[in-house]
Length: 280
Image (cartoon, rainbow, N blue to C red; front, side, top):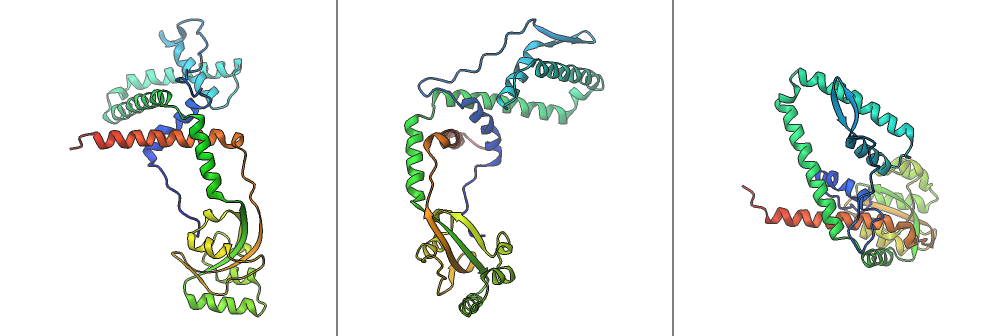
C-alpha cells in the first residue's frame, strides 16, 4: 500500500461528534443555530399501555431524528413511531417487573447513555456559539486547492521487497515484458496487482512523497530507470497518462468542508478541556 496515511480522530470522540454535523448543517453563520421546530403534540399523552402514559414528546423527538436522517414526514411515519413506542413500553413494563432496572449492568449503561446525551447537547450548543464561518470554509477550500495542484496522474507500479528484485523487473520490461503480467506475478500491493498495478487517476499528494516525486518526473509512457525506495519497499513505476485536474466547485464541497471544520473545532475544545482537567 502506498497511499499516505490520513489522521483519524479517536473513535469515542467521533461517536460524540457525528450528530453535531447533522444538527449544525445549514445553520446560519452569523447567529446560533436554532433547532427545527417540533410539531406541537395534539395531547400530552401519545397513548397508554396498561394505564401507563407515553409522553407525546417522545414521539416528537423520534420524528425529528428520522427527518434529520432523511426520511419524509408522513402519517405513516408518525403511525410507525407510535407503534414502536407502544411496543417499547409493553416490553419495558415486563422488564421492570422482572427487576431489570435494578441490575448493575443495566444501570451502568443508563448512566453512560445519560452522560453521552448531556455531552452531545453541550457540544452542539458550543458549536452554535462558535460557528464555522464562510471565510473559514473559503480558506480551507483554497488551501486544499493549492495543495492539489493542477495535474492528476494515472500510473502503474510493481512493489517488491528488494532492490535487486526491482532491477530485474525493470530489465524484463525493457526487453518487452508485460507490465500487467509482471505486476500480477510479483507485486506486494494486493490492492492493484490483479489490475496490472493500475493506481487509477490521482493527484500527487495522495501518494508517499518519494513515490510522487519520482512519478511526476516521468514523461507519458516512461518507466523509472532505477527502483524507487519508500517505506513500503521498492517500486517500479510507469506513467500512463497526465491530464488537468478537475477540482470541484466550492458549492459542491462546501457542506463537507463545513463538517470537517466543525469536527476540528470540537476536537480542539475536547483536547483543551482534557488538558485542563485534573486526572488522578
